[in-house]
Image (cartoon, rainbow, N blue to C red; front, side):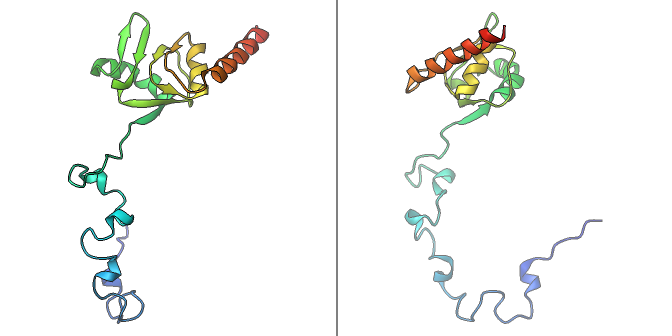
Length: 159
């Protein structure tokens, strides 16, 4: 049977200060950084915009998320059924309506994926190796093209 952990308020019974230090330390609103939303703009409640951004006039913290390439390869058929990814013949078209903002390089893919969202360099190389395409305007695309040329040169040397 699993041992249950005692609550702190029961552990400190019989102690004069309940783990708060001096007897004066746990008085008033100062011990908790003020009352209510005091100090919310100073970092006291740093994630308050996540709970109700319209009420506190803050932008939502959710700006999309990344997904590893291997995981995308596993769930891409279910995303097609949900209508988040479109399929044309053998090509899976992944764009911003999929709910992801970036494809990360972990894992491999065997499907032809046409990316219209951002991706890491390793993910781009793996997608192009599986005869997919990358159609997203990145900063510094010239350096990315040089990176791809090096990969193609290594690929021809191996053959």
